Amino acid sequence: MPWLFKSEPDAFSIDDLKKAGKKGERWDGIRNYQARNFLRDDVRKGDDVLVYHSNCKVPAVVGTARVVREAYPDPTQFDPEAKYYDPRSPLDNPRWVAVDITHVSTLRHPVSLQAIKANPALADMVLVSRGRLSIQPVTEQQWAEVLRMAGNA
DNA sequence: GCCAACGTTGGC
DNA sequence: GCCAACGTTGGC
Image 1 (cartoon, rainbow, N blue to C red):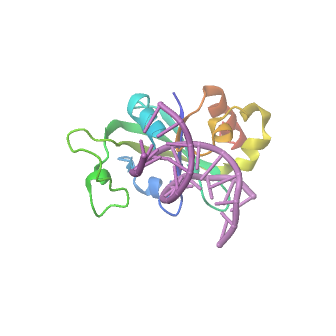
Image 2 (cartoon, helix red, strand yellow):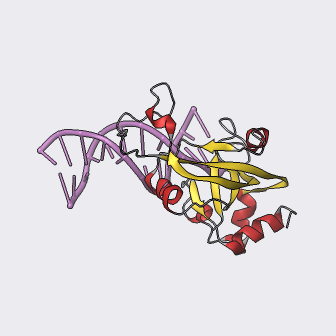
């Protein structure tokens, strides 16, 4: 199943992901139960990911990625120095998980939230209907349509 | 920077 | 288990 992962480009951008190379990078810091459940229960190795930049000048889908490692305990939850430290998460029953993803493409023409909202074919995207979820499922049709809009289909 | 939407916390 | 207070997300 395809997914959309959100990231603030100031913190971690598609360029940062590209720099990480083939090995990919850990997608951590997810601290929302619904997003966590998707990550833990449904995101599988080999799944395709739309990378979305949020909280920036032009919120947009900016690239694609692939899941290379399925859910494992997010180490930042146990690190008191980390931004996403969670003192309430038991060591023997970690509350939060991370996955690893690798860069696949950077879109020549990012598909803005504005363009997505303007496209009736994408009216059902979770991005539109439930804006704030940071890990969300995308249908095959939505995936194809977003890439078509990017000129990468 | 504002603020609406929505998630989480904690007293009762 | 309710719900008010509070915190966060994220578009604008």
